[in-house]
Image (cartoon, rainbow, N blue to C red):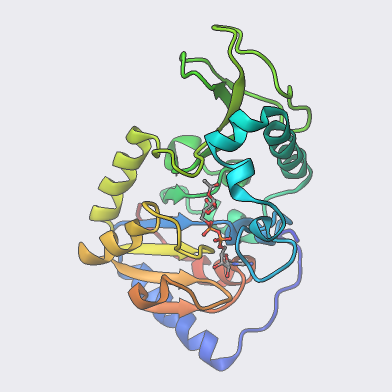
Length: 260
Ligand code: OAD
């Protein structure tokens, strides 16, 4: 799907919820976006936990493919899987949701997504906190300091680190690993200060990232959730907009003057 895809006409309830959400956004002096895999779903990138046979953790074992134990057991298998995801990402485009967000240049983003679709939609990289890393980068498994941007359409595969000779690995956070500390601290600081957090396309089930929604709420932020399905973010939400983010974000954000 892209920005030219025709949109479904929202029903009466959805329109009312949209109006409520727009009025919260209009009053907010500082708005940020917290996103997950659902934001990229309508670009053709599978989510992790949707009740859909194509979702990643329905098809693959996360401990084999997204843990240091899995990498140590079979680095080639892990790198092949990430390279498959990289070439898939190279072939898709930002959807209408990414584009609607990018049109509001002042917004700050905290994302669990390792893809670069927000950047490709036009969001400045320094305005995005990638909590779970970036699939378009490799780094040394031994943390010698080597890190490199790679070509998504032609990833280098499993290669030795040019600095220390160990292997390189994708620059993403695996199960059991800590989040990058500077990114985490910046995201936490932001979520303490926002008046409105737009929570888009996440099951809110992976911590510590998901805890940022509750943190923002405790610090007084309003929460607007966009998700076609009910989930764990619901209790924190002031408004739940049920639908795909490529359908909901354009009418939600159109014409608003947002402050980040
Ligand atoms: P999940 O797969 O857990 O959740 C995706 C969410 O997106 C679900 O709540 C869906 O209902 C929703 N969704 C599906 N289609 C949508 C659409 N078109 N528009 C909006 N929402 C839609 O993905 P995350 O919450 O991002 O970790 O998962 C969190 C982390 O778990 C990921 O960052 C990943 C994974 O293990 C790492 O890669 C380290």
